[in-house]
Image (tube, rainbow, N blue to C red):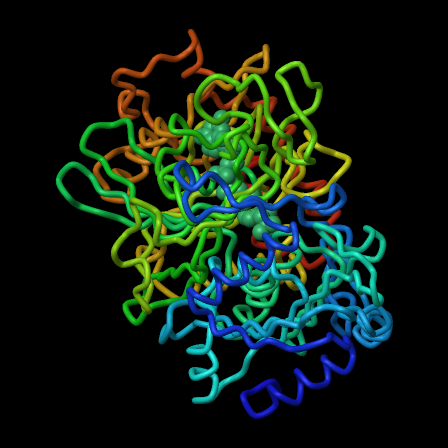
Length: 596
Ligand code: GTP
Ligand code: SPV
Ligand code: MN
């Protein structure tokens, strides 16, 4: 058990293992944050941006081998391999501890070990969790300061009782006496290990400094470890945005959305509706912790304190609220720089500059053959800078959820929106969600469709079959009418030429409106073999310009295509093995027979 009383002993043990030159306890204060940034500037690890155009902001550039989560170096270390299931890389906990102890031994030589006390979830919320991360990366410290509730107050909370999740992290680049440091130290790919011990509730991450590999509060704690806690304790930890949708009469509902990495969560969470009178406010853009409230409804909180958003494609056109949020006090990673030290990336507003410095520090012109910003370039910014942050976003009880959206990038087959017949049918839909592989993780298969149940494929800390059973079980804890309705959306349908058929972004408010009205019980829907779909008259297309025939394609359900989809889903289930709940096979059989 890791508690306040064992904290110093654990840190001392890790210090003796990693042998840093010194240990620094982070207080989380603003002065400390600024001092850390200045230290990084002096070491050539951070570049201050133009103080007029981007005040308080810095750019960081990673090693080209360390640009995204490395799923093939991410492991679940539990006693029984079957508990990790077919979608995780399993390792034996004792074996991997031996291996990793060898890696961590002396790994912080010549460096400082920072102690980061952090909390996931609002102070005082019933589901909040404390973590203590030890790291030799200042990049991690400054990012954790924005992404989590970090600092001495967390130690005070821990002192009052309870456990913490120990999170050990090293970039795996010790410095011998006189050895010069690198701007972005890290270990080669085959030496990187991101290891979760769900039974011990512990995380060891070695060799990478980037994003979800290194900011251990996020995917490692708030999803992989939390998903196991949630299963055991009867709640849910999900890869979901949280938004508040208000209609022109001032009536509002809270909506969750599970889309795989780089598939539109941040954008939907900050959406500016094109429909007059409707508003969207943000509560979270990546992770939701969901529990059953006393009234039998599902309530969600955002455990994070900042956004670690995809830069590429972000513009005043696509996501003005994100652009306002990142106008100051923002950390940028792997973006390109303009000659006057502002940030730039593919898809940002305005003409392409005649000259840039690309994310690898090379001179770049529009004639260059490589992108100026890395496709997984990111911004880190405090949630509080979001101009449309919902005032209740830190409510410790969370907000009651009316609808859950699932979806991914599917160029074919999946219509713009369809609604499940029941919770179990919705869980079936969520289990089949798929997406083209994106740049958010390192993979050779960019572009292929991979199934990604509830967008959690890389983040479930246990067996995917048990995870889906947990979803079904959550639905049995309350009466059906209290459960959120589940909708499957697809903004990414393409025509034969490969163009998006749906404009997306702010225009997605048209789909949100239909979903809202379904929740209100104000609108009838067409029953199709795959679910309820809007009658065209009910989808608000006022002022919308679409390609000829687009709406028909977007709302078509083709028997042949869906029969193929059902076959593919069956193959996927069979590949996952015998733990897939029989209820999901019943849903699949139901779909197949409705298609006949
Ligand atoms: P992670 O932070 O990796 O979990 O990603 P995310 O799910 O938050 O995705 P994000 O909102 O950052 O969007 C990723 C990419 O999808 C960006 O390039 C967006 O421009 C693009 N995108 C988002 N929403 C839409 C949409 O409605 N239509 C289209 N065509 N593209 C979109
Ligand atoms: C994702 O990949 O889903 C992200 C980015 O949100 S990271 O924090 O690197 O996992
Ligand atoms: Mn994400």
